[in-house]
Image 1 (cartoon, rainbow, N blue to C red):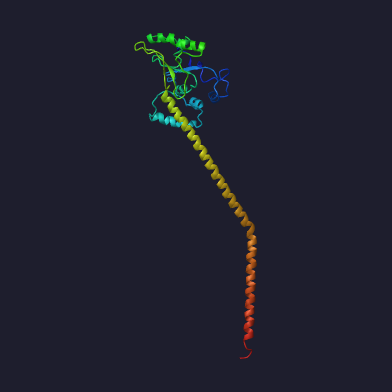
Image 2: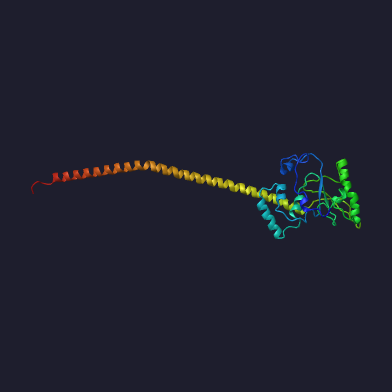
Length: 276
């Protein structure tokens, strides 16, 4: 079972009735069905997988500005700002829990994707150490009790937003560690992406503001152009009339001037004696 062909492994989320009755993932997450769910992750989940482009997280969180968000993520990753080193696939799984009974399978010896299926399905078997021998009894009991009663264990409380409470499933027979409730499930990953969700909303608001400003500017430019065209049209219409008026005034002025000159000549002739 350990050497299964990689190309035969199913990948991605198959959304179909009766579990998934929504049109897409965001609709499903906004209005989840009224069913009890138990879900969780192994502590290293898909950290052995190749890192992806982040499409899983973009879809899961409904981020609108995926390219800019991924650019920000890569900058934070390359500058060593991130306090975790999980792949994007693992982070997407950490972020995908809603109102459920949430757990983290934290056994250090087998923490990867599907390693825990050995206890409940018998796949990927491996030789148990002392801690895993206890897990082999305790772990499947959670799922059996959940199916029977709707609660995997009496003290296991459903996930509460921002408490992010979960069952830490680990056993250490040397120090007495057993599965127990803890708070702030994968807090570093969750907090980081909650911050990027706020950043995504800020980007969307900024884009909207820029778009409105651009529309107003275009409107003003169109108005100025229209005004300029109107002014040009008015000038073109009145220019001939203005030329006629100027011509009439000029002709009238010249006629009156000539008449005054004639009158002055006649006055001088009347005043000049015929004989000196």
